[in-house]
Image 1 (cartoon, each protein chain N blue to C red):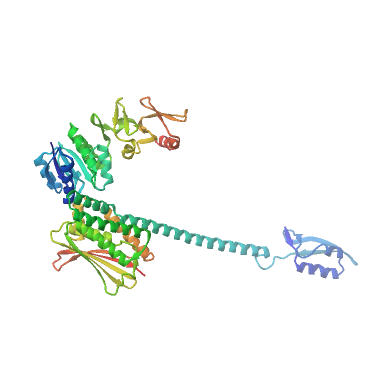
Image 2: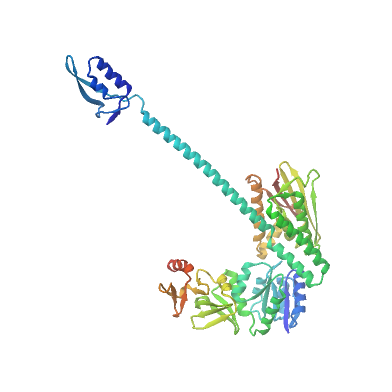
Length: 245
Length: 318
């Protein structure tokens, strides 16, 4: 059973989650509910849950504040939010699951099943999340693949290549990580002063661009010897980006 | 240099002719022709055969007393005319450009106002409430809430197209909004809307939902943190060309609430944006008059104890 605590300041929201967990997630055991940061902190320390369903904006603070108070959290967290673009960027960056309110039961079921299958605690990802939250950026990103979660330094990413709904990350170590998310997801969150989308299916890290070849309509030679296409429409922008650096 | 031959010079020639000049010479010139003149103003001396032998005639051309000759005057007039046309053109261009800027600003504000009306927080909060009623099998509440919510969304969509609505419609929308929030906050507050007797709500037109951000504030800041039953009141009175809308609540007070939020580090960006837009909209409505349209103050009793918050909004309606 997944020992779970709900933290949300609105009674209605807790009621919805409570009902949904009962209806759709038989593997979840709801051990407690809390109505704010202070209350949540106490109940998490006392109950030692496996999973916390956490609201962002609460009357006495935010869900991030709560995570900061709990040092080295040993639980997984799924955020629940109605509307917070900045937070969503942070979640994507750290591969932390989140649900948008009103909650789609299918998404809830999927998120909970990920918790069930995951061996690691959310600690590393929560670290990544809080770092991003603090400064609005981070030099690391958490990639979630079938093997689990990998925290990767941005400078070690050479390029991304899309493969239908999946994205391949090519790293300086020669490793390749396949992430079951579309490349568009990453285009929105990777810092655009460092990463450039050259093509429908390519994003390159500008720090690893070796040279630009004019022949064959133009392509880029990367540090690791790979060649990346540049779309005709992007060529001018790419070249001005390259020379501007 | 050259000079034009004037009538006077011709007369001068004629006089000489009378004195026995060669007529051939006279025939060479008519008024308006040009003749070479030396730097000193002398015309090449003419030698005329007379009965008494050859006669040298020296003619000196004197500058006219005016500074400008005829051409100069015409040039001056043209320059002035061109300048007038130029400045007039610039003036009108500027004015139409200013108008265009003003109109664009207004259009932008209308759009932002729509966005403020269709406040995503409000929409999502409402949807969440509906979901919670359904999840908890409160069918009756779900139905009532959903029906009111649809009515409000429908009227917002209708009003989005028209820039102004009657006060009657405005009050109808605000009432729906407050009823929904009241349900969402589990009847934690009561509200009423009062219109002064001498106001005919069908006769006054104004931009839609100007007051909504202040009602939202009254609910969130004013009531969320009090234990007692909240009281929110909106009343309208006329003051000359202005409709005065006043929102009062018995909450913890504007300043206290702001301070609490700051202490907790809660961002209040969204709300203040809504209120900045309102001030701008009110200024536009009042022909650009930039005096303060919205006054927010805490209401205190004699001991200085905060009783609540009072917001006055000044809306130009005629």
